[in-house]
Length: 150
Image (cartoon, one colour):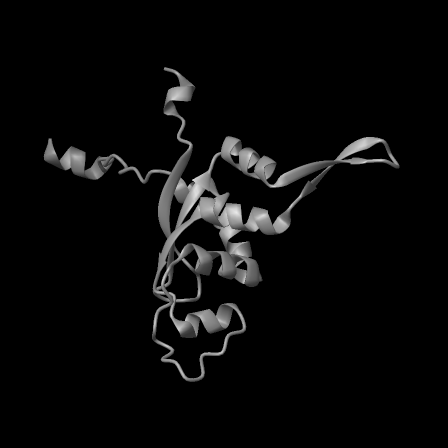
């Protein structure tokens, strides 16, 4: 059996956002290879004349955009009332039960503006247990029942 054939680069799952009932986010797990490529895409190398060495600098804004595109695939149930708990918004003249639709731009804004959402997203995306296949456990016969049936 070849490990390379068993490996999966990415997998999407729906995860409930804690404390906000009905708010679910579809997230993708990124492989180490994909994450490294993402970081490279957002890193520039410049020559420092003082130290005479190449210095790499991560463009954090670009990284947030690329990371968000890579891991946040969709959401449902993000009401304006929920949004108000994640960041400072003005929803005074709007229905708090109205849902904010998923768009790439809305996702980028939420990730870059809400520390709570960004922290949760990083915890979820890099926890492999969230992406493991749920297998049915084989039924183990109870000793008492087996003896009674014989």
